[in-house]
Image (tube, rainbow, N blue to C red; front, side):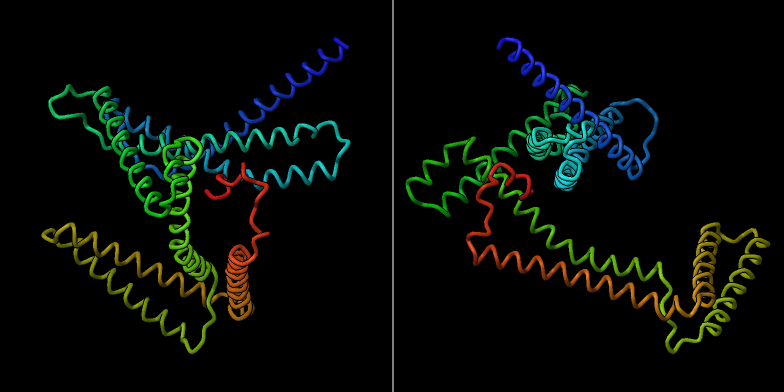
Length: 341
């Protein structure tokens, strides 16, 4: 009996260590990818090791951590579905038994914890730390900027908590609701998280139409549009005349030493734009008939149908949640904060 207990404890220990290793490896991959993405779009700074460089580096590390947690939150649901399908397809395979429910549950808990940490602490700290300069009259340095950042975080926390407290007190005036306002951990923080999730949902609703229009614009730039009532030869001829005129003006300015350098730069820029237009027209002229008349309409119809189906599914789900109470996720209360985010 004691040997069985020891064996069970060893199995639990090894499974726990395995879960920690898998979580660490997944987060390391997400962190490396996030660092590469932020480094790609980050503004290039000087290599001088001054105070601002140290502050920028610390803020970058915090933003990288936040982006890695966001990527984990986005990929966690597909990862859970795929791992469950793999286990159902290969139930007796020894090498994939680590994809169990304990690992998925641990990943959900870690993502929930770190998402709250990033939302309420790391992102505001990174922003205020970048904008801080130290209090007036105090000694300049990293410590002064950290002190100012913590003071700003404390004041911001008081402001947000006060706004949420007043809003909840105005909405619910009964005695039970007023008593729950003083319950910080069980009521106040989940309510605050729900309010922030609501703002994120409203922002998503405002940004989604812009993204859809951008999707059609980018696809229209990649594909060749059909030439309907257009004379490409005439347009190419006009563009070539403009290009020759700009080249003559540039040759004249090079021989004239009194011509301003900014005017030459403007002419070069205009010449590049004209050449880009000529290349686009020549590409449209060289494109095959099926690419111009068949591929472009099919791709646009697929995008339009996908957009319409997505909007219809969202509308149907909203109607089901409003009308049918059984559609509400009553049994998944532990995953509700993550899904609402």
